[in-house]
Length: 253
Figure 1 (spheres, helix red, strand yellow):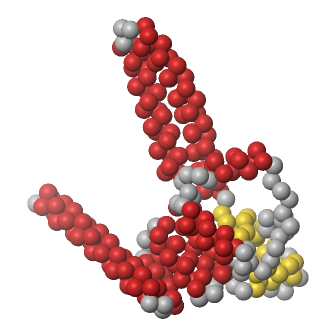
Figure 2: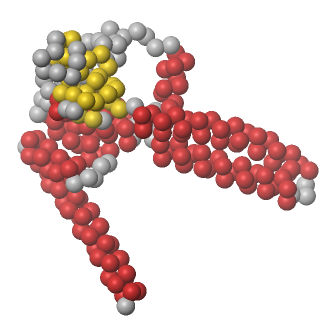
Figure 3: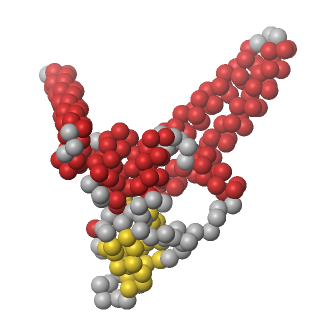
C-alpha cells in the first residue's frame, strides 16, 4: 500500500511538472507572437506572467527586456537585461542590448577609471555563472584524481613523469577555479544590486519621508543595496553617493 501511494505521488508530481512547463512554453509562445505583431504591452504581460510563476531563463528575461525597451520603460528594460546577463554573462546579444539601453540613462555618474588589473579580474570573475565555475572546478578535480591514478598504477617512468606534470598543472587550475567559485558565491550571497525603475526618485538622507533630500536619481541607474529598514533601502551609487529610498522604486537584479 505504501509503495502504491508513493508511486501515485511520483506520477502526480511528474504530471504537474510537465503541465507547468507546458503552460510556461505556451505563455512564452504567445508573448513571442504578440511581440512580433507589435503588441509590446501585451507581450510584456505574457512574459511577466511566466516570471511571476517562478520560472527564469536568459531568453525569458531578454525578451522581457526587449518588450520594455519598446515601451520606453528604460528602468524595467535594464533590470531584465541585467537579470539575463546574470544567467548568461557571455551572451553577446544581451551585452549589446544592455549597452544600447544604458545610453538612455539620464544620470551620468562621474566614476574614477578602474585599475586594469581589477578590471581584468572582474571580467574573468563574471565571465561564468556559479554553476559554470563549479563545473570547471569539478572537472579539474576529476582530472587531478585521474593523473594521480596514472602515476601510481603506471609502470612506465615516462607516463609517471607526464602524470606528475599533469597533476601539478591541473592542481593549479583547480585552485584558481575554486577561488573564483568561492568569490562568486560570496558575492552572490552578500552583494545585492538593483535598478531604479521609477522615472525619478528623491533619495533621502535617512529612512524617513520627512528627512532631507540627499540627491535625485532617475530610472535605469544601477545601485548597490547595503541595508534595509522596513520599506526603506540604503543604496550606494558607483560614484560613492549614499542614501535611502523606498524599496518599491527599486528592482532587485
